Image (cartoon, rainbow, N blue to C red):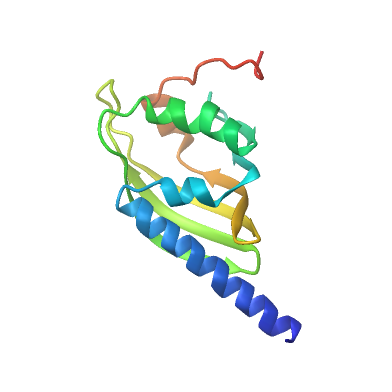
Length: 148
């Protein structure tokens, strides 16, 4: 197989994998997204929010990012995927999320995830979002031993 056809096959496989994951997330099923994370997965949220940092390791992502975040939600998190684009091991996802926090605030954000895939799993994720909305709608995450 030529390099071009290998890259095309990888691109197509990665795009399809993420499209399937996002289709489930859009139905409220986050399990395939979590299952797709590599054990040494990292999730980076740039910017100047209490949530902004790199979370390294699947368990750290679950314990220090996702669980505290979802604990603030009063309603089920709903997403709508707008676009999935891929090039080799990189996949870009544009989507909207809607939820109401326990404090009664609307947290309706628009996201762009840039993912690096490896062996069919998500290795790295860079999350771009409205950081002003994060600061106004969400409480700060609880302090962690790593942040101390």
